[in-house]
Image (cartoon, rainbow over all chains, first blue to last red; front, side, top):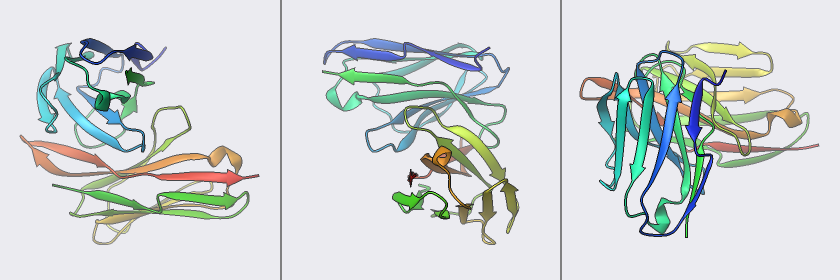
Length: 113
Length: 114
């Protein structure tokens, strides 16, 4: 039973398109995150949600819009995709914000051509 | 803002040699976590340290949290090919809207030569 799942696993699209990535966790955690991992493997936090509420937004362009319909789901919608958006996007969850184990999803590799 | 740097960025070791990665924060941390990411995989939690000067061991892995809670290290004794991957520290500290933030370090990629 997968703890944190993401769909799709791979996403190839053209510049200017809009795409969404979905994330679900079945751990009962209150906090969920989106991370971007670039080609140099740096892991950068994008957003944090606590119980469906946005708590951290790390100066991400407003083309990125997260949505949390309930505390088990955190989706990421990206408008007007750019070449620089190509990366692996990880969803994660934790019981407590900023402390304790984060459980990561398998990642979504986004390629913008 | 809080920055967490790791050195070295890359390390190649012969199987059986020891390996250490160092993590340094620009600010005092409330806790430090360590994660391992295998090639093509996702980060997996290894451990969390919260006390100043704390040392924890997991088999061949030894984790330390500095006295000033601004640095940490991960030491692997007698590396094996299964240790290959990128090791990240993640520092808890700083607040945004009342919630504590976690900042991931820059990572150390370990290659083990059989």
